[in-house]
Amino acid sequence: MKQLAILGSTGSIGRQCLAVVESLPGRFGVVALAAGANLEELTGQIARLQPEVVSVADARRADDLAQRLGEKGLARKPEIHHGREGMLAVATHSKADVVVSAAVGVVGLEATYEAVKLGKTVALSNKEVLVAAGELVMAAAKKAGRELLPVDSEHNALHQCLRGGSRGEVRRLVLTASGGPFRETPLAQLESVTLQQALAHPNWRMGNRITIDSATMMNKGFEVIEAHWLFGVRGEHIEVLIHPQSTIHSMVEFVDGSVLAQLGPTDMRMPIQYALTYPERVASNQVALDWTKLKRLDFRKASMRRFPCLRLAGEAMRKGGAYPCALNAADEIAVSAFLEQRLPFLGIPEVIERVLSRTAGGRLERMEDVLTADAEARRMAQEEIAKVAGGVAAQVRSA
Image (cartoon, rainbow, N blue to C red; front, side):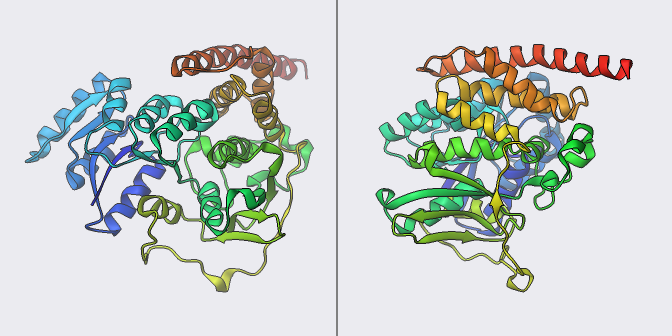
């Protein structure tokens, strides 16, 4: 029985991961859970799964969780931790065979890195791990002799397709993208995009940040960077295609012209189960592709003019060093400002580009370097948000 530790257990991926675990009784145990502020969901998870260790965002919530568990009268209560030390305690739990890295944002970066260094199998959903610290993390994985197993549907699809040939036989990787809610929107109308419109993804139901990143296509830019590190393929051999149906999750083209594609429903339980049960394939009655609804498969190139974040991600990857880390940090802050309606939609790529123009080069040789670069980019992003928002306000007043 594989024992799991889950970073981000109350988020979308974390909850679906536990749905997979509970659909396959006898295959998995859960020894540790890390969450943020959703104590109600976490309390239910603890009652069902009886982990040994849990972590929450801060000391106040740790006290609140202890009180909730006391009121439930559980026969077996877990150790309760919080903050950075709590995340590390969950990720490095001695009994954990597999660490599911599904925490949103840079909060899960250090804990995931430590799990990789310990030689644990990591099922990776957190994009920040490889975008911000790909060189460090992959070096640690190589040293530990462990493969990172991707949970994101696109990289999971590539992982499956690459089982059909050797890496030396690969011509290119093709990441598919739905194009989000604005793939057909006239460019002039993007200036007046509302929060409600940006959150209305046509195919997937996800958390707010990744939904906005899908609307800007920054998520696809991150995925190109991740694919580069995960599969050792240079950026010029990784292509992004708009595929509105989201049925083909990604493809691999081999040197002989053969193309392998992975198809599936828009349901994250499928790639999660693949990562958790790898190298086996285990029968599932939860998800299946409905062929009767598959009428057509459309593809077209992604427009850098429509999706400037995709261009910015490519530039950051080519420069390397601190630039991908700054890209991620600036995006997280800019998206947060948009969600709080402090920044217009087109202000997101504008803020990111400004931060990248101010970012110093240089390699990130230690995790401390990554965290410092992340903090500096966040500081600059807040400054640039104030400038962009101020400029927008001035235009409104003068109109």
